[in-house]
Image 1 (cartoon, rainbow, N blue to C red):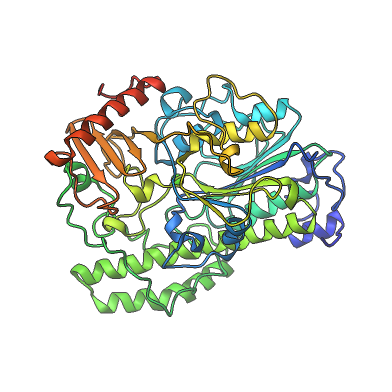
Image 2: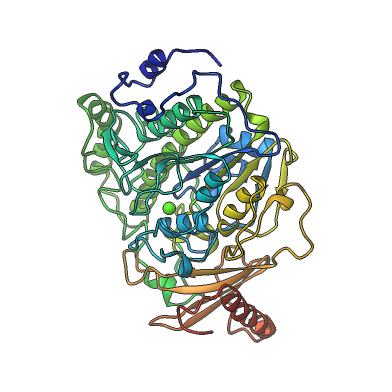
Length: 512
Ligand SMILES: [Ca+2]
């Protein structure tokens, strides 16, 4: 790690000393290079979370459409979970589950419209009480101020991709640049200037690659000369499923707007950024207008525009995660730091003709989950155990040697991570989605998934059940709920669903 003065460091970030930088809130900060790792039995924790990054857009998960060399470094140095799922596939609710270790019906955030109750128990508060230095930097999205952090600096609401405002410990400031770079700048600033030798927990959370997928200035023409492969189900006709899949409003064909497709300007560009953007998009948009595409050709064009922009946003995340990993190596922190990479949920990348999330179907239920911790996790491992966002709080508390409160509902992944999965590890997971009626029109549903089967009940206004045999039908194209050959499975999973709802004390929604 190069040694730089505070002034030089700020200059590199494009921040004037004493103005924009976060350092004003770090009284007595130590100079670069002095940040000591925590005691070996209490690791540091860096929780990296992106927004809407599906695992099928990561090369360590076998992506056919992009490469993520830096995210792959985490997988190569640690473990990749192939059955990690979220319990409610939408942004704010997933975040609330992560912080509390409790399902949505118990943590105050069932949908994106509700406010997080910051007075409740969270894992950052418990880590802080146990002597950890805690920070939250980036996208928060919970409508109330962060609590439990020694330092926080978050985007207001969804935040902007270009020249974003951020709220630092209650004070709003504006920055010039691209949001993924800026969040990383702040994270590195905090890491390099921590106040003492306590172990730390940093939540480093990106806005990208959330809608409307605005690429950064370094990636505007990436993928211009390639065609992104289409998913098999881009022209799905929704036969074999119920009304919920047919009646959604999240399709590339019908829902995607001119704003999503970059036919409207970015509102807060600087003149220089605007010129670069227009040079990149102007000729492409003009060619599109002339082509006058219709029908499937138009959907195909929209898919290409959507995916290229999404993947450009992912590329900036990958570059920036690389910066963070480089810093951990250079500062000698890598051995003593648990690094987690995840996203608040998955996303439809044209699968079933969709974008967005919400459904309990695979592409949005599945979270990427990579964990690197050289002291306990063998490099290059893959686990097919069912892991949930509900488990993250318990896992971090376990590493910190803090007793897991009895009202948390998940379970520490630490033994799974170290290759000693308990014999009674879960064989099924419970899901519950609430945000309806609302944007994208995905009906309320709950369900249970095992390694082979998935049972879903769309309980409000249609009362329809679906069952998928993921072994025979991994793309979930044909519900076998009414197939007599699956009667036993239906009976077994219905009982399991009922059991899980009782176990998690979920009395919301129609009883099973
Ligand atoms: Ca999200």
